[in-house]
Image 1 (cartoon, rainbow, N blue to C red):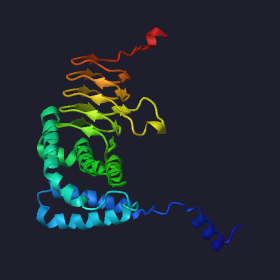
Image 2 (image 1 turned 60 degrees about the vertical axis):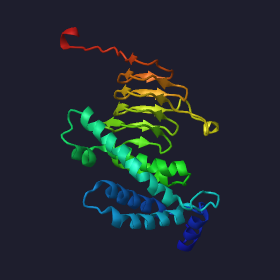
Image 3 (image 1 turned 135 degrees about the vertical axis):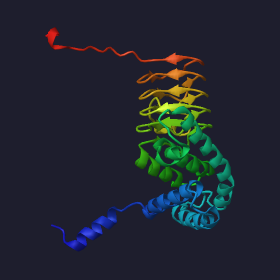
Image 4 (image 1 turned 180 degrees about the vertical axis):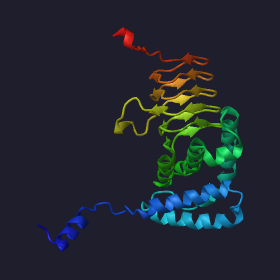
Length: 264
């Protein structure tokens, strides 16, 4: 049996990642929370919180930008410039939920209680940093939302205006997915890659969803060349690996058999 000192030495030897500082994960989560409340909570003062957020962001820069070629300097200034436009988009997302969900009782309910809205909000706030090339933090932000909502949106996805995720749980949207305006998707929808290979890293692997498309629960749409045409409806449990023309309705027809006692 190894003694205590030998165990310590072995553990240190196998800690191979020199930059793996888990403070980055926790501080990213704190930054995400502070940013969300600054934008939406009426009791959280914007003018007081922006300097605090800048200070928190500086800590993320210190922890995340260990590679000198990463573009970390002056990102905060550009980030803040884009927040008003991002907030405007998020308000449109919330309004799309209110107008599209008969169970929604108020806009306040959407902001405070809808996991789909929260996931979209954190995605949009992370997407700006992803576009800047800021390392790791955008992914930590969306994974924080994923853990809380069950919605997995890669920060690299491109999502247009008035996006609505209903019920939310189990939704997966891949890094190179493109979603145009006024799209509505339900729980369990996957916009994924047709197959996985590291050699495809810099290629479009995930589908394009044109404007005014509705995708119902548990539909799976795969492949970078797959385009769902505008104004189309994709029914629940559909499995698609090829494009759909505009104004289409796609549905999956299962065979359901019911056996009763008299059939025995």
